[in-house]
Image (cartoon, rainbow, N blue to C red):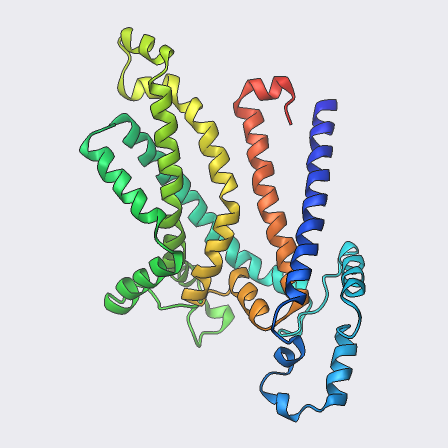
Length: 328
């Protein structure tokens, strides 16, 4: 029990220090941005807004105070659960994140699951078929994907499957012009397929190449040579001696990819106009919406931390050495 408490304590301390550093750096970077938040707030009516109105807007949003004081005010409110009000959506930041989170969650979880399973499978196949045409084909495929930008892959899929073939809608999360109560689950899935496929195709490369190399190292070990001498080979050899040894690194890499997955979702959601957190992040950044951008930064940091935390928990379940040794 004491090991669990110690583990949770250090994890919480690391997360608190990480969150503070991320918030501070993000706030300072936003303040150095050339975007004028007042101009972004007013928009096209900027020519009609006089100096007195600009001053009142700045006072209303607290932009007339020194940067350090603004950070303290925002930080104290954030600790109490109030992330502020979005300047462009005119809604509480927590409400916007809650509304868009489930769209992004469906997209990222689908892509994450597919990329992990497919990447692990083809990585194992490449290692078991080392130096054959199958291995060379998989490596070529992965190296090509590793150098492919997410937005380019999204545009390619959009052009082929939406524009040319017409199999899927061009964008959005639901059909345009349809009432919310009339939108079916099939409609949502149909709009989800291409963005999720974009992230899945890109995410396969890292997992596959990493799994291939780890399994090649395992297959070159002495106990594998002894197992081969006893007549074990193929799937039985991998199942008995290779699966657990390559599963742990694959789990770490897959959960560590949460940050890359979130970054890729930003680009994919922009290409497909998918109404998720990624699209909200871009809008907040381009229009100088400081409260929304900082709220999204906190949420993304929490999202990535939870992924790494789950990886540590799974490590302790899969590997008895870590569980018994009480490693942090």
